[in-house]
Image (tube, rainbow, N blue to C red; front, side, top):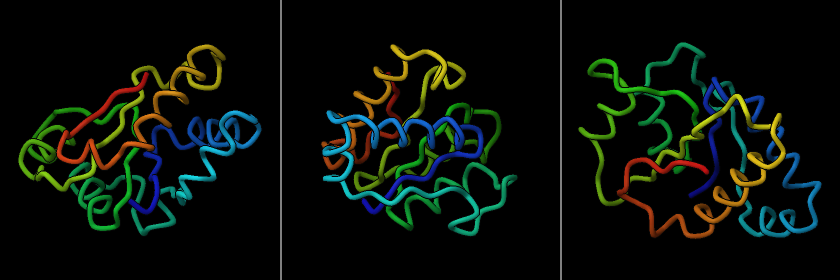
Length: 136
């Protein structure tokens, strides 16, 4: 795994979470140890209107974990349909924030998301092929 792609619907909140990692003594060392690059759509040539299947495949091709808040299962190119159709044992999971609106606004919720996210990232090889993980 090379990095994390923040979905268009959660890019601002995720940037704030990464800043929280860097400002926390407890989390900064772990985040640095992971050595992950942080990407947004523009960094890797995706358009804001890119369909879910293209976003998922781009993440797989580039060894990126997709962090999202609302990709759904509506239609054949939806994220859920894509995962069900294309998932292999080597596929990186998608991490979905259960309540993205609370991220950054609710300190307790943000901490729970951060802890669970770091837990997943530290053990990411054990989660290949699982499809989707939720935080918190």
